[in-house]
Length: 267
Ligand SMILES: Nc1ncnc2c1ncn2[C@@H]1O[C@H](COP(=O)(O)OP(=O)(O)OP(=O)(O)O)[C@@H](O)[C@H]1O
Image (cartoon, rainbow, N blue to C red):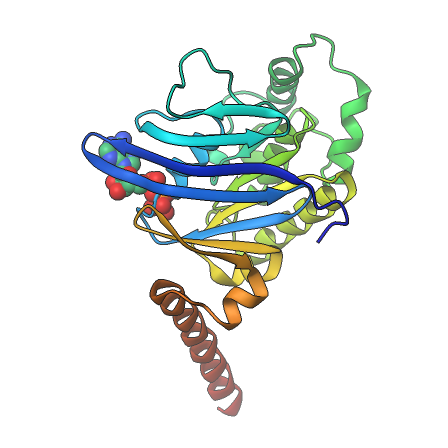
């Protein structure tokens, strides 16, 4: 947990619907400067809808209540017209395939991202250390397919960081990667976030990932937040039925794998 514990993002009572279905129901969330928060929940819990709302991209959902304060900016979800989207929130999609044009060289895509994000035309050498910091090699004349998925994911991360965000949102950061590459990407995020006091919001189905990286965790089920607290506390003593179910399931997987590896070792 970082020493600066000021609240960076404060979302209160967000409710949205799609058609007649209420997708998010009175959702509140707080993120402090520099901390890592995980949102865990099953499919259809409303995680992606929540992320989009935080970035001011609500459609197809229609918000009908909620207030967001982020880094000195405010957004009232009950009257979104004429309101600006929050600035200095960056987003990394779950799959590198969603982030790159396969037919354009990486250098070109990096330069385009720079122009769009910074509004400047001349890419400066200032950005090169960011690539180094994330353990990336020079682009050469490579196309996306010539880089591993882990490297592509780290490049997406570098692009997201160009605008010096105060909050970095990672949507299912490990689902498209093998476990070793996923750990490499998350270590790079953690290191960068700690050095630059960037808060990180990770959306995941994986409670073990939350246990490893998140200071605090929120558990969502059917559009509601059912628990929010320190990750270690929440995992050792979940209060909600759904939280208990998730934690028990996680133990079941761990024990099962443990038994499997000991029986393999005994053979
Ligand atoms: N375009 C849409 N039209 C109608 N319903 C939608 C649409 N997008 C999402 N929904 C509904 O909103 C609910 C929440 O979806 P959302 O994608 O936010 O959940 P999620 O927790 O991110 O799920 P997953 O983990 O599977 O990505 C689901 O019931 C889904 O069916």
